[in-house]
Length: 164
Image (cartoon, rainbow, N blue to C red; front, side, top):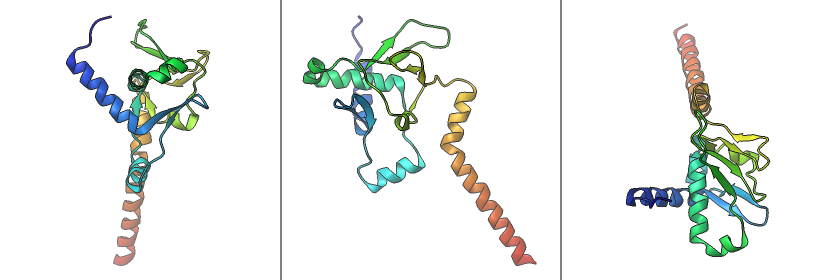
C-alpha cells in the first residue's frame, strides 16, 4: 500500500472531524447512525438544508474512527467494506459488513454510492449519475422553489384584489 501524502492525510482528518459531528457507531444495536442536533441552529439548518455526505466519506470516517479507538478495533469487526475492483462508471463499491446496518431514515443523508447491504441483494445508496443528480438537487431545493412560486402567486392575487 502506498504511503498517503500529507495533503491526503489532511483531507482524511478533515473528513473525520466533519463526520464525527454528525455520525456515530452504536455498538449495541450494530448501527451507523446520525447524531441528534445539539441546538436549535443545527435543528433549523438540518430542516432547511440536510448535510449529506458521500459513502466514501463515511467509509473514511469509519476507518479513521477505528484507527483512533483501538479498543473498538479489538472488540468489533469493520462495519463497511470497500471493493476497489472497477466496473465502468463505478470506481468504488461499498457494502455493510459484520452485521451493521444504517437505519432507512438515515440513508437520506448519504449520496454517491453504491452502498449495498451485507447480503449484496439491495442497493441502499445509489450512485448519483445523470437524472439522479437532478432528482437529488430537486429534493434539496424543491421546497424552496415551491414556496417561492406559492408566495409569488399569493402576492399576484393580492395585487389583483387591491387594483380591483
